[in-house]
Length: 335
Image (cartoon, rainbow, N blue to C red; front, side, top):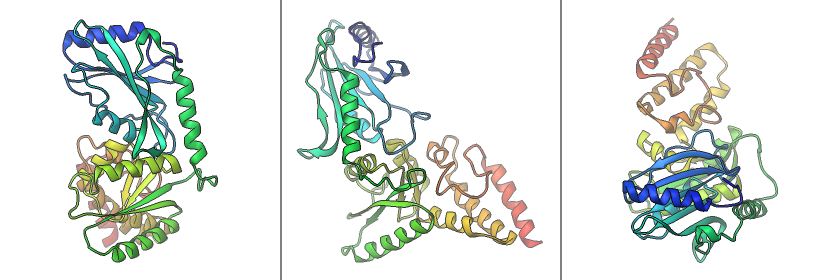
């Protein structure tokens, strides 16, 4: 596929015909070179994008792929499309509106903006007929990347290390206690060698059971992460396994909480054999309820802050092996 086109006219037509025939949305994740990275098949209304493992490091830059997919119900780019664009940091998202005869009507595309325009962090391109594309896909992506780089702070702190945005969600009427806790979290992060790029405190009537904070606020944080070149979110509140999964699956960025940060600091500073064993046990006990048959959230925590300490506590270790390790550690500590 020519890299300068969003999608070639022939491919747009083929995708439209297949989509109409099977009654499902179909999509392609396309790298900047024009190579197809992944083929997706959804239902009549939507596609589900799996975690994009192996595509550039989390945080800081666009993902390096664009999504081209079909729409069968005559809809423009949907809110779900735009959330995927933002949370997954896609280069570009494009919907091919499929007509009743199975032919493509137009391409509807959008890209991210480093600063919201009219309250929205994305910009819509003019709809184009596939065979009459005028805009250059490569040039558009290059301009977007350049704009993000221009608005990024000149001093790229800890370029080779962890660069975090600290997040706190409070249900209290006053922000004072949350601010004091946030100040303490910032000190902890700094002592762990993390560059703190920004802090965010959200007041809510109640915690969001899925994301802990509102999805709109999470979108704002992800835009800041892209602009500031952050690769880590540290939450002041303890997150349960489901919340970690939900946030990482939606944002493709590493997420830890205050407990993991503190355990990491202890793992750095433990010197005695007994101290190292105790920290390893604490880390294993913390990880144990967070393991699942498919926990992509934890699989992204195998490097960097929040992942120091025992080499065995990677996602591939199952509960039995962790329990075995805990039993051995307990015996060593007793001895």
